Every structure is written in structure tokens, then in C-alpha cells.
Amino acid sequence: LAVHSDASYLSEPKARSRAGGHFFLSNEATIPQNNGAVLNLAHIIKHVMSSATEAELAALYIMAREAVYIRIILEEMGHKQPPTPIQTDNAMAEAVCNGKIQPKRTKAIDMRFHWLRDRQCQEQFR
Image (cartoon, rainbow, N blue to C red):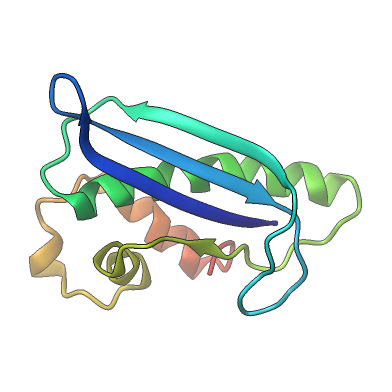
């Protein structure tokens, strides 16, 4: 399983942002090849995001939360899952997930987005 995630900041009425993602099956390559998507998601993020980075983190959170269920289904079908790569186009959001940003810079980010960092430590995502 591999995931692409993206968000658009303040693109909806009432200061809302939009999240989208594509889930597709792949091999264990460092950069998975795109093939036919098995699931496409589009959501309007319920909360007002204060930056593009926070909107991207919200999109990553939504896509990762869904990926957990798909990973379980694939494993129950007999397809062992290595850590799932999740790609984003925002370097700052990626750095927050990878733990490369110091905690004092992430105080304002909603705590549920730190769930991504915990799941990466559990080697569910990369």
C-alpha cells in the first residue's frame, strides 16, 4: 500500500481547507510507482487551519487514519505490509512527521497530528 496526500489551504468558504488523497498498491520501492488507485478520498477539513503546513498535516492525518484500516484488511487477506510510504508536497509537514522540527516550533499544532509521528515510530508508515 502507498499513499499520496495533498491539501489546499483556505480554499473553501468560512476559512476551511480541503484534503485529498490517493491510495494505491505498490511494491517495496523507495519511491513507489503510480498505478491504478484503489481508493480516492476528498474531505473538507472541519477545523480552521492556521497555515498551509497545518492543512497538509490535517490531510496526512486523514489519509494515514484511513491507511491503517486498509493495511489491516490487506494483512488479513494474507498480504504482509511493510511500512506504508505516505507522500506529501509540503516539506515542513514532512519534517514535523519525521521529528526533524524541534518541539518548540510545533506547540501550536493540534495534538492529534502528532499521532502521525507515533505511528511512524511504530514502523507503520515511512
